[in-house]
Amino acid sequence: MKTPFKITYALIAGGLSVAAAGVHAETLEKVAATGTITVAYREAAVPFSYLLGPHKAVGFSVDLTEAIVDDVRSRLKQPGLKVEYIPVTGQNRIPLLVNGTYDLECGSTTNTSMRGKEVAFSINFFYAGTRLLTKRDSGINGYGDLAKKTVASTAGSTNEKVVRKHGADNNIDVQMISGKDYADALQLVENDRASALALDDVLLFGLRANSRNPSSLEIVGDTLQVEPYACMVRKDDAEFKKLVDGTITRLMKSGEFTRLYKKWFESPIPPAGVNLNMPMSEPLRANIKTRSDKPAQ
Image (tube, rainbow, N blue to C red; front, side, top):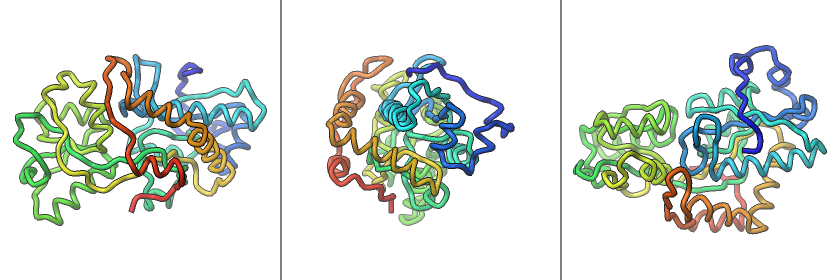
């Protein structure tokens, strides 16, 4: 990242900072007044946003975030605008955005109608679907093999809801367990506390590629519920959403978006130089042209 990480703990705790006090202000007005924009990142969402060492986040979504921040600098005519970075989880990402702790999240968050009641979403920048990661010798080849098995996911994820619903609809007795984040959820499988991990397919490819023993793991099952990823901004802030959408539109029209996709999904990525070899999906190719912010159904 272009700026060192700085987590404002007083802000997270709800201290009386200028940013928190301005939670109901328009984001661009608040950023202009404070000279700082606070953005969120995920710590283990390969290849969207993940840590290299203790103080450096990289990934496809991180690159999108930096492009948006550059456009904020240009819009406000503040080339020296400071950026503060704060880690978020599946559980706290929405509350911390709503209460003003941070201003923008581009990570691996699914754009849903339910979440749209609390926050606003940008143009969709990725489409994923729930699948399963399991050990090759687990005997699990699909959802029908999950009866009376423990399946891991992350707390607050749509994947957990999708698997529970699929199990209920098909009379499959699935036991769910939650990890605090993606890395923790993977460990539940590696340590045999769970038989499978249910997450968006791209996250599973990333977790497997960077796991202790990638060859021991496989990704199985049909794709359940195609889900769009999008950046989150505060609700009813049309001006800031327009800027974020404008950045994504510019990247998509110029070909820069496709270049970034190839960089993170079809090329070797750090830290181990693993290539996910994940071609762009047809829904994403279509959305480069239509640029929809339609939520998952």
